[in-house]
Length: 140
Image (cartoon, rainbow, N blue to C red; front, side):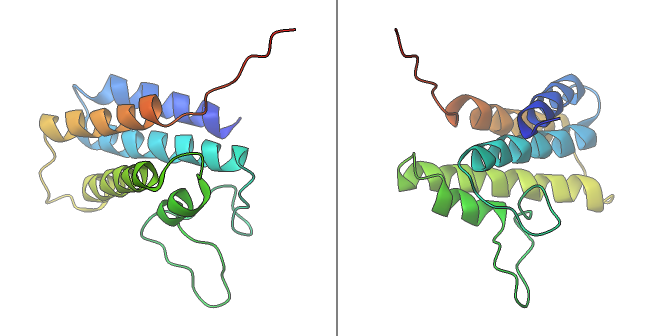
């Protein structure tokens, strides 16, 4: 399975869960965006941390001798096919989705509502529809 396939599967799951399973929707929306961006990074040739196939999540900071940054920093530094403002916008979307996911998964006392699920799906959709590689067709 590829990161692109994982991204597509998680996107479908988030879209199915948005009306009924708000917490699960937030988790899937974040992971869909994470997988989509990881696909872009891998396509760009970015090396992942040792013993991992994807970048660290936004909240994880490198420790000791680790040289690998989290996904937000990689977006800003490595996805240079876009201008800096667009890279920052993508980094912020990933950060916002990650925060929603943390609330959904680790704070049972935090109320998660339909509006939160819709917002997460909206942000996820923005990642998919506005941050992609255009394939050039060459005519022979």
